[in-house]
Image 1 (tube, rainbow, N blue to C red):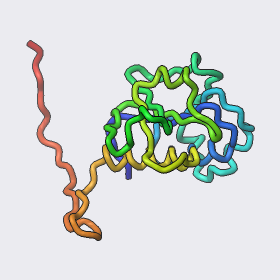
Image 2 (image 1 turned 90 degrees about the vertical axis):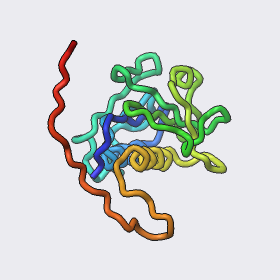
Image 3 (image 1 turned 90 degrees about the horizontal axis):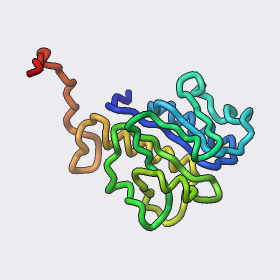
Length: 179
């Protein structure tokens, strides 16, 4: 079970293939995303659920924005643009914000200059060339899970951990008095 603090959303700008949207929605549901969104999307809306067998639409809200200027995110939510550009931070060197929304570019293009200009962070997956957008989204969500989640430490040698992560025990309540 995924039990991270904070929240995240997944979005795509200018996406044109409903099967990619459905795959992103299914993966977002599996990784515990709080919401998903599209900006300036041009896919056939009725086809989105053909690739989503988890009924994510019943569990993850999908917000559809007509353009970048209409994009609205929760207060204090950092926008993280995922794009294969030179000035983006490589994913292994990036610390995920606890409250954020990741946004990806379309299948055959890049994030718009307008959208990149409002991103708080820009990151890239260190590959030799661009990946399918739904695969890239899955990699980002997996990385967020392993870096922010509570897991047993990786072993030094190949194989599974030799120690099981102990269950967290909460202490007595702490009462803070205002001065």
